[in-house]
Length: 139
Length: 497
Image 1: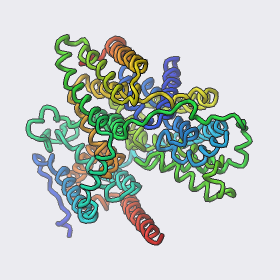
Image 2 (image 1 turned 180 degrees about the horizontal axis):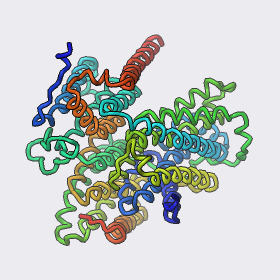
Image 3 (image 1 turned 45 degrees about the vertical axis):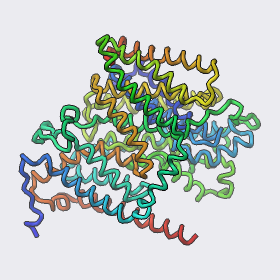
Image 4 (image 1 turned 30 degrees about the horizontal axis):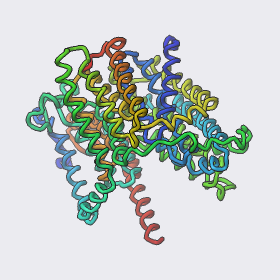
C-alpha cells in the first residue's frame, strides 16, 4: 500500500504533472455531466433556437461587431501618430457614438446630439486623464 | 501610523462611495463592474489611496442596490433581491422614502458589524495560517473550491466551473520563480508569444464582469430606462428611528449571517441577503407580514448584504482567498502595486491593514450620510439612459485591460474573449464565481501540490501531514455531502409538490 502512494517527480516533466491531473478531473466531470444531463444536452438545439429567437440580434451582434472593429482599428490608427494615444481617442469617439445609437430605442435629433456630445467629451477626458496626469501610454 | 490619512485619501473614499452607489443603483450594473472599470485609476494613486477608492466603490456599490429594489421592485444588484420583497410593497403604499432610510440605516449597521469582525478575526486567522505548510495551503484552496461549488445552483456544474478556472489559469509557463522548470504547457501552437504568462487576471475579470454584463443587456435589447415619474419615493409617511425598536436581534443576526457568508469563498451577496431574510422571517412574530411591506424584511436583507463587505475581506487578507467576485478584483489592486495578499500580509504591511480598516469605516459612514440625506437625488440615477452609460463603460473596460500590463493589446483581446465566454457560460449554466476563484487560485494550487509531493514524495501526506489537514478533509467532504443531501431533498420536495 505504501508503495502505491509513492510519487517520484521528474523535474523536467514537472510542468505537466498538475495540468494532466486537472485535465483528467475535468474530463471525468464532463463525462459525468454528459451522462447526467444527456436529455437536456440532446434537446440543446431547441433551447438555443428559443434563445436566438428571443434575442435582440441587431443589438447583440451589432455590439460584438462594433467592439471587434474598435479593437482592430485602434493599433493601426495609433501607429500613424505613435505614443500619443490618438489610436484610442480617434477610435473611441465613433465607437461610443455608434454603440450608443445602436442601444437607443428612439433616435430623435436632440438625443443623438446629446450622445454625440458625450461621445466627444467622454473619450477626450479619459484620454487626457490617462496620458497627462497618469502618464499611461494608450494605443 | 496614520500618515495615509490625507485629504486625497478621504476624498477618494467619498468619491468612490458616491460612484459605487450610482453603479449599484442602476439595474444591470454592479459593485464588481464599478471596481473593474476603476481599477486602472489606482495605477498612479499608490496602494493606500487606490484601496480607498476601491473600498468606497465596494461599499457604495453593495448599498446602492436598494434604491431600485425599493422604488421600482427591481434589484439594482443581486444582493438586494430580498429588499424588493418588502421594500417595493412599502413604496407602493407611498412609504418609499421611509423604506429607503430603513435600508440605509440597516446597511450601515451591517457594514460596521462586519468591519468589527474583520478587524478582530482576520489577524487571528492570518496568525494561524502562517503555520500552514504547502499541504495545508493546497487543502485550503481545495476547500474554497468545494465550498463555492457546494453553494452553486448545481453542485456538479459548480465543481466543473471551478476546475475549468484552474485549468485555464495553468496556460503558460511553469514559472521558475515559483520553483517550476520554466517550460510551456497548454498553449495552442503559434500563441507562445502572447500566452507566455497565460491570460492576465484583470482583463479576464473585466471581461467577465464588464463586457459580459453589457452583452447580457444587449441580448435583452437594452431595456428602456425608467422615468422619474415611475419612482415611488412617496411622502405619505416619514421615517422614524423608532421603527428599529425590537429589531436589535434581527439587525445583529442578519449582519453576522452576512459576515459569515462573506467569509465563505465566492458565495456572494445574494446568498447573504436570502439567508438573513429567511432567518428573520422564521424568527419573526409577524412572519405573515413578510413580503407585504414589513420593515423587518428590509432590515434583514440590507444588514445581511452589507455584512458581506467586511466578511469577504477576511479570507482575502488572511489567506489570500477572495470572499466574493468584487474582492477577487481587489487582488488585482494589490498585484498592480506588487503586493501579495496572504497570511503574512497583515503582519508585514500594518499601514496598509490600518488603511483598509479606516477606509471601510469612512466608506460606511460616507455611504450613510450620502444616501440618508441625498436619497432623492440618488434615486434619479435610476433614470440615466443606458445607451449613454454602456458605451462609456465599454471604453473604460478597454482602458483597464490595456493599461494593466503597461500597454499590451492582447489583454484587450482577452477582455473580448472572456466577455463572450462569460455570456456563453451563463447560457451553458456554468458558474462564474467558482470559475473566477479557480482561475485566481489555480497557479498557487499547482505550486502547493507539486512542492508537497516533491518534498514528501508520497500522496498520503495530504491526509497525514497534520491534524489541520484532517480537519480540512472533514470540511471538504462535509460541504460536498451536505450539498448533495440538500439538493436531493430539494428535488424530492419538487417532485412531491
